[in-house]
Length: 135
Image (cartoon, rainbow, N blue to C red; front, side, top):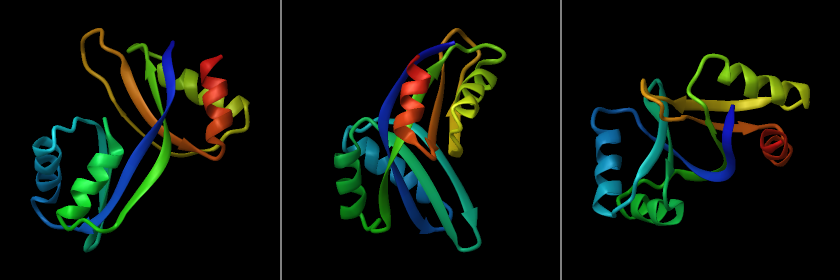
C-alpha cells in the first residue's frame, strides 16, 4: 500500500487571520518558481497557521521572509505516498500504532483517478516512523 516514504520539510507560518493571506503566499511561491506540494491551515481567532510543503523550503522561507512573513518555523515531516484505495490510511496508522509511534500532525490529499494519495505527517519519533513505513 505504501509507494514511498521520505523525509521532508514543512514551513509553518503564523500569520494574521485575514482574507487574502494564503493567496499572497501562493503568489510569492509562484513568482519565485516554487511548487507548493501540500498545504494545510487553520485559524484561531485573529491568528492563523499555514503549513506548506514546497519543492525548495530554503528558497521559500527566504522569499516569504523578504515579503514580511517573519514567523516561520521549519519542521521535519514525513511525506508518504500511498495507493489511492480503501484502507490505505488504516494501514499506515496501524503500522505506526504497532510501533508505539504517536501521530502529532497529519494532513494529505488525493484525487479520483489512479494517482497516489499523499500524506504529510509528524510523529513522536520521526526516524522510527520512517523506518517502519519503509518496511
